[in-house]
Image (cartoon, rainbow, N blue to C red; front, top):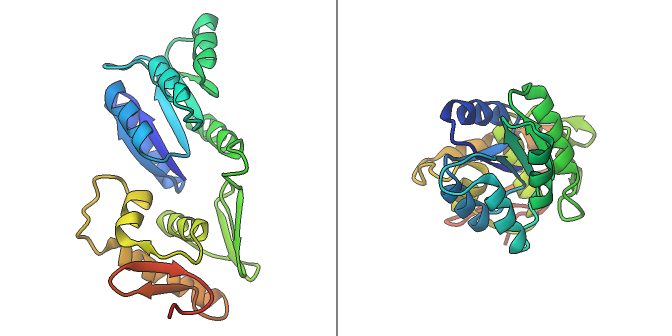
Length: 226
């Protein structure tokens, strides 16, 4: 799942990015409200972590703008202001939850998981294809009932391939959705990680599931593409 962190304190933003990536999430970051609003409107995120006090556009303005354009991505507001009226303003603007700084990272993770579970029918908790099952909230993947020992990035790759099962996905699409936006498009990092994931899937079950479509990308399906 892909999360956007909008936080002008770069130390806090870096802390959140690092912690969330270690939990297996794909994370983009913006350090002012103008950039944050642009990214939230252009890219498809599963969750926004949004500071209230931001240069450019405030967190409240961003939420109002997104909701006015029917962008329903879950929003967790982060703020040092804990007055009841501030919390009410944030929730009334369209935020889904509110967390006051300073906060424990495990509490933030619990709220993130709760909001992702509320994502609705378009964001199922479990993805299943053939004999592979992935729990997006518990971060657990299995093939033929046996647990797959995946790195966070391999988990994200499998998640994206399951969401797009039997559809060819381009390498550039994987770079955008699974890696951050400024990743070097000339890198062979996609091929390396797909190779590791393919081997783990093969060792856990019968038959190849991830196939290379030469010159294009990859496809998750039971039979090799023609």
